[in-house]
Amino acid sequence: MTTSTRGAQVPAVLVLEDGRIFRGRAYGAVGETFGEAVFSTGMTGYQETLTDPSYHRQVVVMTAPHVGNTGVNDEDPESKRIWVSGYVVRDPARTPSNWRSRRTLDEELANQDVVGISGVDTRALTRHLRERGAMRVGIFSGAAVTDEAAMLARVQEAPEMKGADLSAEVATKEAYVVPALGTKKFTVAAVDLGIKGMTPHRMAERGIEVHVLPATATLEEIYAVAPDGVFFSNGPGDPSTADHPVALMQGVLERGTPLFGICFGNQILGRALGFGTYKLKYGHRGINQPVQDRSTGKVEVTAHNHGFAVDAPLDKVSDTAYGRAEVSHVCLNDQVVEGLQLLDRPAFSVQYHPEAAAGPHDAAYLFDRFVSLMEGQRA
Image: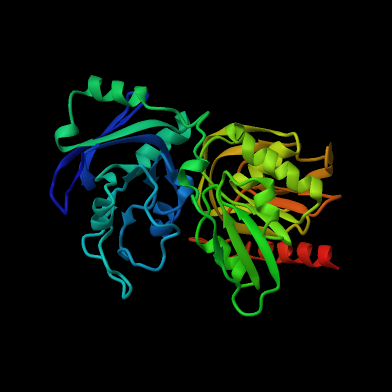
């Protein structure tokens, strides 16, 4: 049970599964929450971060010290609700200032029953997570604050992210259509594994009618919309559990339909091609991650939100059941695979978020690349 702080100085405690404790004040709702502690390096874009379904069951630590400066508006959410299980900030804005602001961030968190904590040394917390890795965490405030041993035991009982199958929990239950803007040129079937609202919008801008389908969609349901291309979205959880999306993608690859995947979709393509996946120590989250497109040599500043990665060789072409495949993009911070492409079929994917919500627009060309694949197939 949670209640709103609305500015009240309610004590709060953050407890990590390794026993490290941080104390602060309640921010948003008062109560308790659990999840995987991760950090996001974006200095802005908190509203898009909060409403990204890929953050389901994660407690997000903001590395930027000031959060909430522009309040909350009704135009920028990436889905119909906040998905983070908890929120950690250092210095929340006392009074937001933006002409589009409708509510404070504190009010929005409380209205959606999201437990947070403020006044935390987020620099020290981030350094701890970088050294020890992402781990389970609990936030306790108000009456939920008990003795440290009891709170730690609750955290250690919480489920881990490794092995979690979450995409069906955040995906749409019913199919819907995002119409093309202007003249319709193509039809795309988009498998929703946790899709962000800006993604079908970016395709609609290019004359694509997008049929968004549930994560449980069948191959027959995909091809019932007569797609020119198939898209697999971002989403939460461990890709090693995503057997249905992998089988679905293999069916698309067998038919040779142009295919594009983002984030979780990249991991699904990796598995479909026979590569493994693994959990990163603390993941990539934020809007300032440098990635190189190896086909052009261009370096892009990109938006990320992933804690798992594809285990594919960086420096050789691999033979797969669907032809030759190679790593197309790589993170320059740590050489993590950030993209895959098939050389003998029209299919590619990236690990990051080219829809730029929130984030830079360096990677918008990837939607044009998808259009080019569909144009080539039609020709």
